[in-house]
View (cartoon, rainbow, N blue to C red):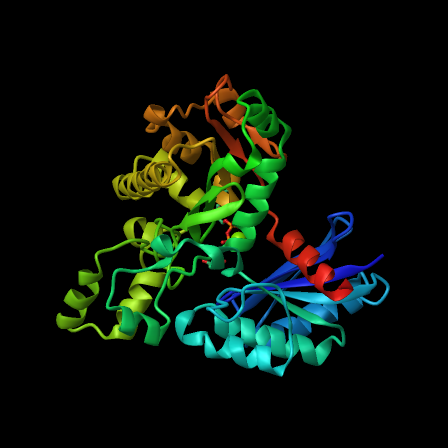
Amino acid sequence: MSTVLVLNSGSSSLKYQLVDPASGEALAAGVVERIGETSGTVKHEAKGEKTVRDLPVPDHGEALRIVIGLFDEVGPSLAEAGIAAVGHRVVHGGEVFSAPTLVDDDVVAGVRDLVPLAPLHNPANVTGIEVARELLDVPHVAVFDTAFFTTLPKAASTYALDREVAAEHGVRRYGFHGTSHQFVSSAVAAHPVVAEKLAAEGRSPETLRQVVLHLGNGASASAVLGGEPVDTSMGLTPLEGLVMGTRSGDIDAGIVFHLIREGMAAEEVDTLLNKRSGILGLSGVGDMRELQKLVAAGDADARLALDVYLHRLRKYVGAYAAVLGGIDVLTFTAGVGENDHRVRSGVVRGLKFLGLTIDPAANEARSDEARVISAGHGAEAPLVMVVPTDEELAIARQAMALVEG
Ligand SMILES: Nc1ncnc2c1ncn2[C@@H]1O[C@H](COP(=O)(O)OP(=O)(O)O)[C@@H](O)[C@H]1O
Ligand SMILES: CC(=O)OP(=O)(O)O
Ligand SMILES: [Mg+2]
């Protein structure tokens, strides 16, 4: 057996999985949370056994040391599991990195150079890579969230700014969650119901028009034509687009200048938009499960937060229908997209004019499988689907493919 240890370093967390890319099986998975706070938590799961520890975790380096220690202590042993590579999720690859990349000192320097474009994400990615290279003597592969979107059409990736200023500062739409959008859109294209639909309509796979909604803590939408992305909602940074757990998504850029002129520092506005906005800013809670509880209890702020969230989603689906010239499949994925049937029906209900429908029983049924939730999928009618994303498996496969050459 050959396995890949996949590391996903967030601003205050480290998620990891030991994956066998051939079978798709995760041999172990876990998360270190509240890194840098007075007390952190480590949750490690392997062979159905959970290990939970509360202890201070000062930084991402220490987090990784604790994780490697747990593999030694409770297993599985990384050596016995045949670890062949470490796959690192790196959020921003800028214009430099467009494919999975074998990590050397120059690559680490390249990821560090991109910190100004992803100040919340890339610093943790750099630390994660540096410490992992110290601790694990196997090839390290960086897989970039931006990679799938490097081929976006210019009309979609270009901001209407002074072109010299934009070029000098690398200002363009990069797009994020690309590993997920690619994994999910390929799974949709390969799904038998979708293949049947295209065949029945006498169409080739290159004409398949998809909208994918990745709704996690961070959230983004993409428009995909025949497997190629043609637009996406995140931009220069992962702040643009949909309403998220703590991020505002789209706002008038004038708000930034207004707040700065009113006395806020640029850093404060950055923190406001990235960490104190979105669902959290509107309702007091950033987690969708918590928000739905407040909505059910009749909380008016929570209701408005959900309405703003759904309104933005419907706007993006409508906009992407225009970009694609119609929609064949609308797909929900990630924590909210896979689990929250109210959000799914709330989006689709407003989009009847696009032919989108929902079958309440299929929508409310619980399953971990890719599935169709639209009502009656007759000829020409678009499908609505739920497809679980698996960024870790996608990263493991890409890392193994690179290492095996
Ligand atoms: N059963 C559920 N119902 C509604 N929302 C859920 C459910 N399970 C998870 N979520 C939501 O999914 C979000 C986290 O999604 P996830 O994809 O795990 O995020 P990330 O990888 O960006 O940290 C949270 O808002 C959480 O509340
Ligand atoms: C890019 C991004 O927003 O990632 P996450 O959803 O993990 O915060
Ligand atoms: Mg995620």
